[in-house]
Length: 265
Image 1 (cartoon, rainbow, N blue to C red):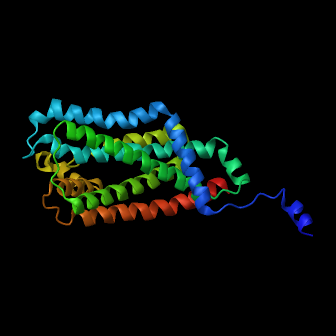
Image 2 (image 1 turned 90 degrees about the vertical axis):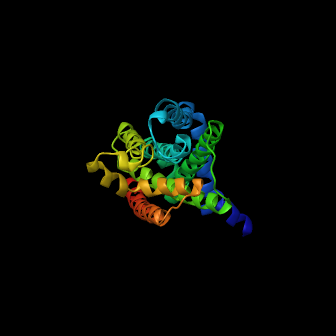
Image 3 (image 1 turned 90 degrees about the horizontal axis):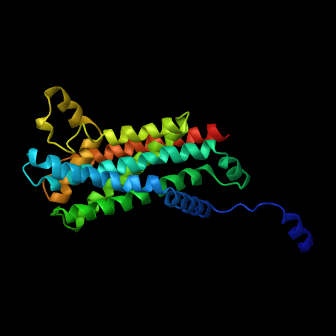
């Protein structure tokens, strides 16, 4: 009887556990990232080149009350994180339109694992590029004053921002009608830090733009990172930053789940 049961089940695919599916999808997405050399180099080198340009070409003309490299590093890190997260939109769109989802469905892989793999790979890529940016910043004179608690707090806020932007990018990837449209989200994410305190103090901006810069969602993230790393007062910026990130994350995850079911159902 046991032999008959075994033979009867031999042709039936066995359902793997969720963590196994997720680990498989994370490994797949990381391998795809490593093979896409052009995009990988761009995501790593663009923020570094921008930081060098701002520090050495424009920094001498901008008065921030401190060394410009110390002022600009948080903004460059956020620009790096935004650009790296935005590439997730292209990856998700290619998964949905490239036929691979039919194979995943035949293997009974959950949609949460597919999206989770893309988002986790985005986080890993962003953390790697952030470490690289910090390394270059130290070489050109960045000297943070943060202690262990401040470093952990800054890391937590940065991680929350990366997660929120990665899930938002996944939503954009499912809404986009073409790869070019999904890629357009990259431009939006790289532009967002500019109308903020990322590169110049807000009080130097025209009056009409100060309100936008002060109240856009990325500004409290930048102010939190700068204050924590330089050991200066941060006020309620960290809580505002985390509130924005939590709101984006909740909305993005919900939309991602709904859209994925509609696109693959």
